[in-house]
Length: 403
Image (cartoon, rainbow, N blue to C red; front, side, top):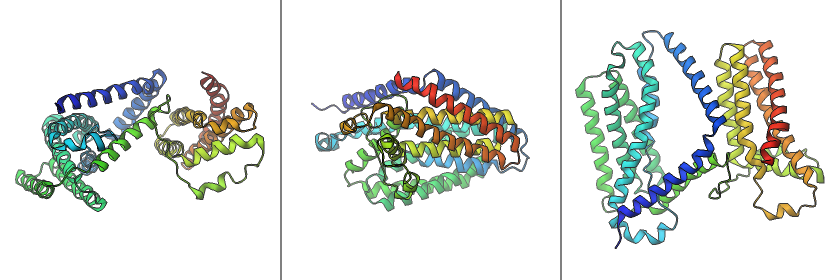
């Protein structure tokens, strides 16, 4: 006898165990210290920035734009697997309770994220509004209700396979969420908010009626679930081996000029191989670009030299540490072991490439400091960055790889 409760407990429990197992590797000792440093630094500058805000600062608009994003992105974590297309699909009529529990779990997790975001943004609002923190709980209740509406609507939209429907739904819901949040924090007339509630109710009902006789799009649901988990596995793979991770590569022909000058010789074989892997894999190149952009922007807005130096070294460490899995990128490909190339060239090529990548990032950070006219700080950050990169690549990373 099929029991959807047992199935959901098994799937949700398995997912929690899976996440917990990898989170232990991600939040290891030194990463926690780095995160605490980042949070502490960010909180200090955020407090300093808030204290300088004028009374006419448009806090409501900024809050509405940011919270609108968290409200609109409302996926239902369904815990479905690839094999369900065959074994569970015939039982679709008996899975209403299963998907309802998935919706509740999604609401609890995303509601907690919303609570954290509101807690971060509330000091900015309290500084420019006389109500202060008194309206925190009423605002949270309304935003949680909005989150529930977004989850329910997003679920109905997944009955459609047309990408245009999904795109327009995101646009419309983001507009509604942003307007509603802005009017809420602006303390608009309650009747205006009620009009928006009516609009939201009709919007949901429209899609509910349209999809009432439709079947679930299992391919779409499973594909979205796998993409969400693949993102987590890519993150976890930076700290430990993840057997479930599937490699994703892109040709990126426009970047060929970066490796076109690598000599065609035995001692450069692994340099070419690792360079190709770095440029073609979104896990490595995307990570490098994201951390470089975030680090450069943060360094640019920090006003004192020591903070710029520490943040520069911190982002160099984060980039280098998370690029270390590139060493094992080809470990499951037996044909690489058939290369008639000495093993010493593999290690030297990896460390050389890692040094080039981190040095490029150090130069970018120094340039952003120089853009502010702080030439001396820029040179000091550049020299410190090169020294750190050398120690990281040729001492720390060698120990990590051998371990």
